[in-house]
Length: 259
Ligand SMILES: C[S@@+](CC[C@H](N)C(=O)[O-])C[C@H]1O[C@@H](n2cnc3c(N)ncnc32)[C@H](O)[C@@H]1O
Image (cartoon, rainbow, N blue to C red; front, side, top):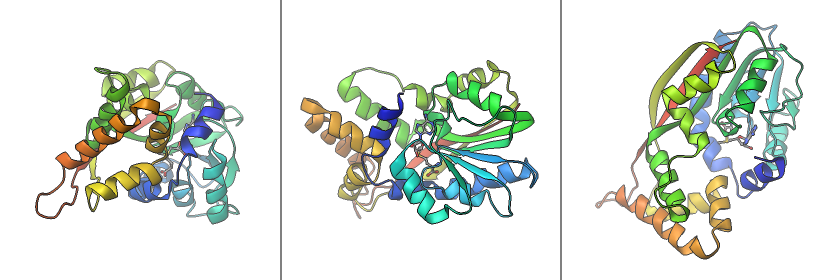
């Protein structure tokens, strides 16, 4: 995806409600990255968003680089953690970092948005020999995978999950990493709750707290009503008849690999 399109997608609504949902997983990714490195290593947070993971990567004075292509995201991260972290305006396919200069690349649902060939090639280039990749990505099953298909099929009936969602397929993930030379690949399946107080609360989240969904709705043109109805119907399937609360589980994976 070109930089201006990445900017258009990820700046199209507030991101804070999604960042809050993902923050507990960032803590897990950070712990793994810190275990895989020494305080002398540079550690990268790829697709850093508001910087939750980058902040967790710095229990000591180590050098943390937050790669984030979207100005709206960076501005919030810099305000919160700017003096502790080096923020770089770049994509994960073209980081501008020197070759073999990084001890670990950590990414919480960020690297999954890179081109599946150019991304891994660049990660391999910047990692030092023995350096680690630790990334989370959405699973191919569970609420968010279903929701992705529900939304996409409004435009392309019968279509399959897009490339960024296919990191959740173990064979695909292994192939993407092995093909550029990564070794010691491990693939773990997890799930997390993805709840809303009500269907209306879920719809508000899509329009005001989830940039990719807000972007899709804005771009939907004459399919906008159909898209909103499909998203609402999907939420309704998970709403409790007693309380109206939308109670769901969504699957995610943690993929680790060594250069
Ligand atoms: C779901 S958010 C995750 C943000 C953050 N890691 C977190 O845990 O909240 C995805 C992030 O990836 C960034 N992103 C999208 N495409 C990217 C690319 N090609 N290279 C690097 N980052 C990208 C977006 O701007 C956004 O900040």
